[in-house]
Image (cartoon, rainbow over all chains, first blue to last red; front, side, top):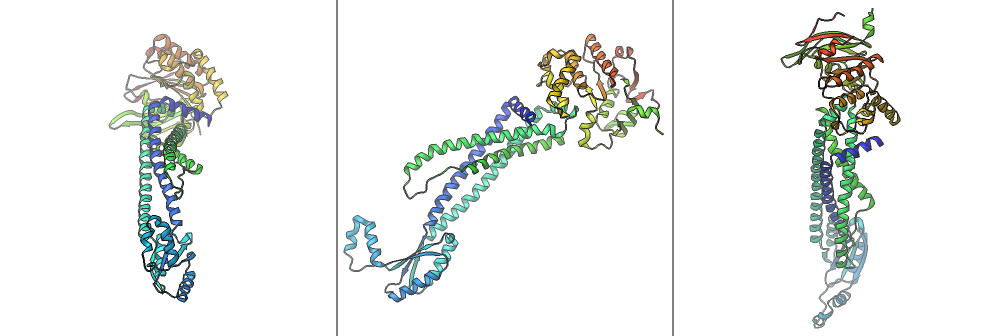
Length: 292
Length: 229
């Protein structure tokens, strides 16, 4: 193993230019795909945080009696997926509105009667936070007697969920394309190295070298290239993240979710991906070359 | 019953033909080469000498006929076993075939590395053969910095480093001056005397005139006279 590793490192140094090209290619691919992944990760965090705050406002028909209100509350309690129910009387709602409007409260002072309806604020359990489930629950609640209207910002959630799913798909597609392109470039670079060393490989065969003896250092080269490219790409991303992240944090409000970098496990997986890229590049070119 | 000749033969060729498209490079070649024999294959350029050697180490497949090398039937040998066959040979080429990016030491060590020998043994063996061919002091040199004669001595060292049963030399003195050629021939003789079978393909008449071994003539792909089995 030491012998093969030493040979692989020596070969990399001897074919410096071609190897540097491969390492840079892998680094750039890792950078682009990881940047996308990091954006996706943080966007997912934010979306999850927003989803946790999803509430359904259930407005009651004006003039709903105490008994009808209690009946509606009871019916709400029997619906699965609801975590908590809070009654907000129209008086409380008006006070809340005044609090929020602050300077414009004089507008409300002149009103003869309170135009706001009584309402229930319904919080959902985490499992019910998907757009489909929220819509389903809202429809059920809307069908209850004494309920005039249900509000849950459905369009916003739906739109964001659709965008997010599309974003996910584009991310996967781009990741796959970059992976294939990098494997292709790595394979071609290794092929150039192989062609530049075909006489040497021919001589090795003549003195009794097996295919594995010839191939193994190339596989190690691929792994080293992939690891180096992965480390450089990830390092570049971390530098960019540190620079942008500090500015972003300054602009963040307390309610926003803090942005984060990949976990150690994900970093290891990205490096593994880089190594796999180098390895596959070698595999394709070597198989073809050995057949020749 | 197996004859004495068969018992002693390390290489046996039976009605071997080699064709490159319509061109017949070797025609009905039948020959036995005995263990520890010094054999010259002589003939003009393009007569088929190199082709005959290439068939032995499977650089080329035969078109027809059969070859046995140390009991291995080359027609039936699977691809993955070809390296094992080649390790039975030490091959010397007219153009030396040394790896220019590796030192003299590394070029010779390669033969033992492919066999998976230990580093300590490789070091001992490589130094020993380089001493025998008189190249011990040029171990760290790269082939392009050596003269033709020196490069061929390294090639001889590489050929014998793995203690092969058979040494194949394809025009080993073709690119050398008389003095270097004599040195190479002396080295081949030395390894023959140590028990190796040596097959030399050459058109060097001076080399053959001084030879003590058997000489096979080859003309237009035909061995002349056809040796009897």
